[in-house]
Amino acid sequence: MDLITIKATDGVGEREYELLLAVGDRVRLFRRTNAKFMETGTVGNIGRNGSVLEITAIDAAGLTLRNGAGREGAVAWNTLRDDANGRIQLAYGDALTTNTAQGTTVTEHIHAMPGGTKLVSAFGAYTSGSRHREQSFIVTSEGAERAEVIARRPLGDQREIGHGDLLNNIIRNFAQQPEKEAALALIERAANLRRGAVQATQRVHRAAEARGAAREQPSMLAERLMSRRIARAFDEKLLGLAAQLRRHGGALARVARIGADVAERLARMARRPLVNRQSEAEFWRQVGQRGQDWRDHIEQREQTRRHSR
Image 1 (cartoon, rainbow, N blue to C red):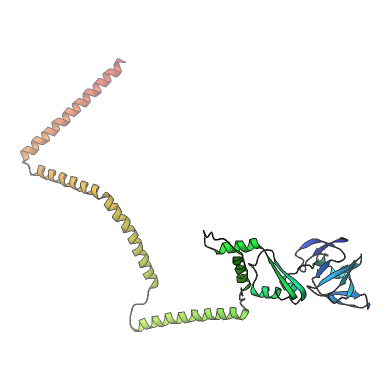
Image 2 (image 1 turned 90 degrees about the horizontal axis):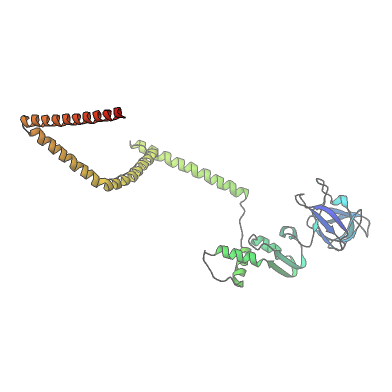
């Protein structure tokens, strides 16, 4: 039965929560904690960050805790209080993270991974799998393992996922050994990059000096790139122009034939005798005069119609 509810926080003050406590609960410490031991009346350390203790009594002054060695001590609330926000730095100790549990030895151990083994590496799997004296249990999410197996298969793969596939996925994740790049490795990689840049610059200068000694033209990379761009552009444009010429070639041929006919007729007219050309001129003058007479007749008739209205 819960006896008290306290405002608690984690070790770094990022999470704040309500913590219900009762006698018999197991709680986790977040820092080195002193207590007044009952049997001797002396003050000493009862636990450190990650220690899990059992509550044997609760009162207004604080908690009475029992550690793994069986020693009981009274811990004042102010000893557990966070200086920044005033909350009590405690959490339930029934489950611990892998990092917190390392160094702990128990009779039985349960390695629980509610989100699956995707984020577990060989280092964490070894730490969590070696906390027990007699037996250890691995508990994971079948749904998360199935989702990872499906994600790793090709699209459209309809094969049934069996227990062997799930076990192989867990084994693959437990065998991961990601390498962390140390500061010295980062410095070495930067030095290799610098060394490579220097060597490349030296090769370019040596090649330029050799061309100069042989009185050859210097290498013009920019000009060559520009020439390639121009040639590529011409190729693209010429392909389109050729297609247009093929599409309009018939029309252009007809225009050329008409032009040739017109030129031939003009030449024939130019070769005719002067008398014929004068008679043709007189004919066209008469045609123009008749047209003008006809336009005058039409205009006169329109004026007569307007006056009659």
